[in-house]
Amino acid sequence: MKHFINLKDISATDLRKILLDAKKRKLKRKKLNTLDIDKDSPLKGKLLIQMFEKSSLRTRLSFYLAIKQLGGGALTLRPDELHLEKGGESLADTAKVLSTYGNGFMLRTDSDYKLDEFKKYLRIPIINGLSPLSHPTQVLSDIFTVEEIKKKPISKLNICWIGDSNNVLNSLIAASVKFSFSLNIGCPKKYEPKKFMIDWVYKNKKKINIFNDAKKAATNADVIFSDKVVSLNDKVNKTKKIKDFKNFKIDSKLMSVAKKNAIFLHCLPRGSEVSDDVFLGRQSKVWQQALNRIYVQKSILLYCFGKLR
Ligand code: CP
Ligand code: NVA
Image (cartoon, rainbow, N blue to C red):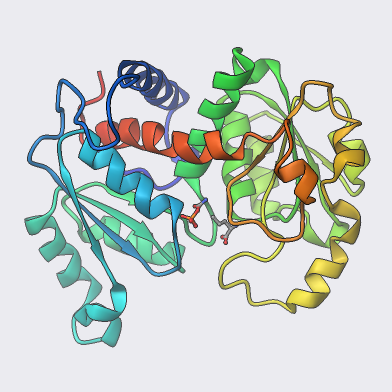
């Protein structure tokens, strides 16, 4: 059994194995319906329990479909309906009970500490479905989408992020080290990645490039990523933060400095950081990106359950 909490903690070999498995499984499903089960039904009889402390559309649905397609089932808990939320039951006891009923636990949480606490007491794998510090399932799936569209390893591409230094970017930085790709980050000075992330990159003898100018960051990019300026439960002055990012909007002018065949990706939900014509335009691959979460998360589940071939 393996946990999936942070890309930083998973070996590059295992991450690559997950992507390969996802590719094979996706190919085999060409003629199948959404709820048809993969022929080998590798997680038959297994239950994934998921819990969301923050809103979710894509992560909720894609994990539901992922476990279903592998032959198992999913149960979604609302934290406000548990004793845990009201303080009537400890996290340790909750974790032990989850381990007796379920086979895996997917948690979207407002606290990274909680992920570690659950990990301590669970006897089943835990998957991070977004925390304040990272969004690993999203980013691994995005690597899959990039390679699927570009038909080459991500290490041969120029990747650019325009936006806030948030959980998704932290995972993208971790991925840039694990998959050895070049990463340009464009953001206002005040919103640069935290020191602990940059230190970790240097400790691993890799480099990321930070620009306080969107055009410089996007020049010659093969892929431009973005995300909402204000994240879920971001405790900031929203109007001020959005104003601080006014020169970092992804519009057709910014896209024009990237390579001609550059693509635009966004994990969704979106805000005003991207213009409609880019988001809905020919370079945008956001719907394919959202759909691929199912395929990659299936292989993440298999990795966690020790069933990845
Ligand atoms: N991208 C993503 O995680 O979407 P949700 O918040 O809808 O799950
Ligand atoms: N950075 C965003 C991602 C949403 C999927 C957030 O945390 O709200």
